[in-house]
Amino acid sequence: MESKPLLQVCGLRREFGGVVAVDNVDLTLYPGQTMSVIGPNGAGKTTLFNLISGLDRPDAGEVWLDGERVTGLSAEALAARGLARTFQHGRAFGNLSVLENVLIGAHTRQRASRASALAELLAALVQPSAWRAEQRRLRAEAEEVLALFGERLLPRADRPAYTLSYANRRRTEIARALALRPRLLLLDEPTAGMNPTETAELLAFIQRLKQRGLTILLIEHKLSLVMQVSDCVVVMDDGRKIAEGRPEVVRNDPRVIEAYLGHAQRTQQDND
Image (cartoon, rainbow, N blue to C red; front, side, top):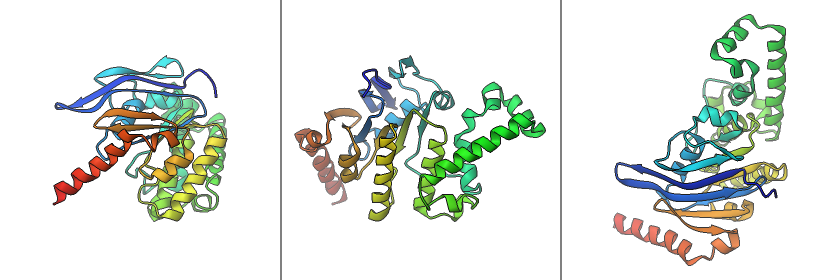
C-alpha cells in the first residue's frame, strides 16, 4: 500500500437547518484500500458521500484527492479527476439500453467532451473518422466492463434497463461507474434490496475489484459483507465518527455496540 493518501477528508461538517448531519469527520484512504463506512440510519453516511463526491458543499472542512484540494468542486469536475460513485437508490436510465447506460459513464473520457459542449455536439453531428474510432473504442471498453459481471449483463447489453431485474439494474449502475475508469469508487449500499445469493455474488465482485487494485469507499448495512471485504471500517453515529480501525477491532468496540443497540432500542420505543 502506498504511503501517500488518495483521499483525505479533514474536519468535514454539514448542517441542515440547525441539524448537524456531518460533524467534523476525518478520513484517510490509501490507494488499493477498501474502507467501509457504517452506522445506524441517519448517521450521516450518505451526506458524507455527497460532500466527497461534489453533490453537496460542506459548511466547513476540506476534501483532498491525490494531493489536490477539491473541496466544493462539482461532481463533473471530480469525475474528470477519477472519482465515480453509485447511489443508495437506483439511478439507471430505464429507457436506455444497458450498453448506453454504461457509455454514459465514459462521457468524461471523450475527447470532444473535454473540449466543450459545442465541440461534442459538432462531433456527434459531423461524425469525423476520429470521432467514429473513439466511439468504437469506448463501446469495446464498455463491453469489457459488462463482461466483468459474467453472464449477468453482457448478453443483455442491448436491452432497455427497465426490463432488467432489480439486481441487474444495480449491477448496471456499478458498471456505469467503472466505465469512468475511476481511481476512487464510492459505493452507496450496493447490496440494498438484494437477496443472500445476489449479495454473495456482489461481495465476490467487490473482492475482484480489490484484487485489481481499485480504491473503494463503501457504505453498507450488511455487516457480514463489511467484515469480509474491508481493510478499514469507519463507524458514524449522529453525524460523528465514533470508531475507526480494522474490522475485527471495530466489531467489538463498545461504542459501536452501543450505537447499534441504542439505536435499535430507541426505534423500538418510538414504535411502542
